[in-house]
Length: 106
Image 1 (tube, rainbow, N blue to C red):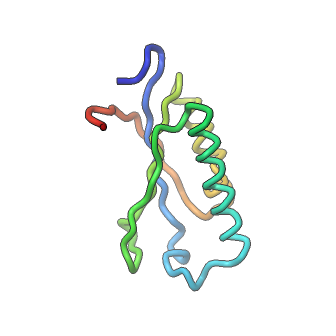
Image 2: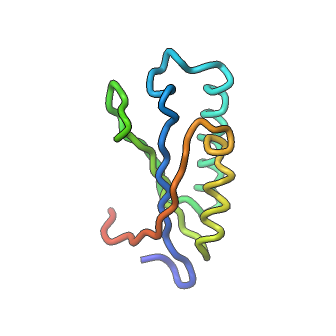
Image 3: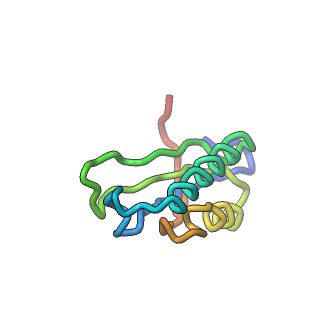
């Protein structure tokens, strides 16, 4: 359901294990997450991000994740967006990219 010439991709974000406990967060990591959020907002405004969110289990486990659904021309473009995500660049989260097919949405 992507516009002609566009494809959808999903990147899954996994929080670094030690950061699953919020008491381990430093001010620098909190600032990086703010920059990460603003980066995703910029991607939304640029028409590259379809949606983003995360699971909210407490306590957090290795099953918790964030996702970002992208709409780009190529997988390379999606990979560039993912690798430039400040949370990924800052080592707070790891990320994995997948081709994605939007089937149903509101």
